[in-house]
Image (cartoon, rainbow, N blue to C red; front, top):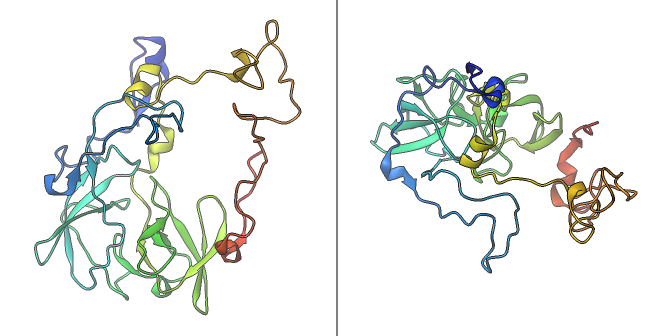
Length: 277
């Protein structure tokens, strides 16, 4: 982690990831980039549906291959790069047939290494193989929930899932949230842990840096007027004044379950993630 001299009060707490020894280039591979238009949290009618978004620095989207389903074709790692749209680093790889792809970089993946996707690939960091061929106790990332559907689980910085068991057609995983669930054993997963595990130690430090990230200011409900928020109104500092915590629209939050009761994948969850106290 990189810390800064306390030249200002906000700079005193600020910290960032030290990229110098982690990424190898600051220029993306242009054929695999595209521009995504920013809508500042607004829908097709121009109405704000996600608050506190807007402005921010311009950025190019990197097209990531989450499927990595080109079987038995070795690929060489060309670069490890920063991606402004995600917390993890990405790697540019070149297959033996000359095709390039961006993939999620694994922790400790180095430039010049060769990786491969195969149903029974060697158990090496960065290699991608069928879950049923990964021994119990190994860490995997970018895990498919449906075979061929592309990686959906364990994709953010430092994430991983632990293989707990293989039972019939399913593999049991322990996720980073402590949830234990089953996924089909024929799905693909990459060996190792997602890169940039120090990301959770980043301290933004000041409001101006948050604005550059596209985050606009958030106003507390308790300082609003009664017409604007269930917590609003009163002389000076007032208690909440409502039995249950609510959103700005009066919807109950805090302990209110949002998952559909009859969701198809409920049967796959063996143990739900613990409540945050």
